[in-house]
Length: 161
Image: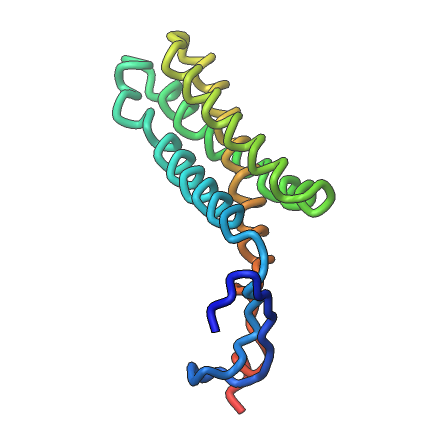
């Protein structure tokens, strides 16, 4: 019982936790999977944290211009809106990791640019780029999650009969 080199795929159709087969592959590189999961979680935190970091300082960025404040605020959402669907199709063609990485890099670069820029229109452009990065990341990361074996449900789990 406990041979570290043993690699087994359990199968079966029982959903009970009684020592029967569960359909989970116990082989593989769990260290790599853990790193990927941590990267996706950290990326999700970064994307969500940066998405509204500009909101508290909008009044400072465009003092007496509510329309410019609106442009800066909405640029992120426009970028994400325009990117999510194409990003899903791209991740289907090139794989999940490339769009995830590109989205995270673009989000971080755009966040740094927003810190350094002073022109409200350039900040809006950086925020638009940040939205594009978020769209790339979110679409690809959710597709990756849905591909995982643990996330898939068997017909016995879904069916009430």
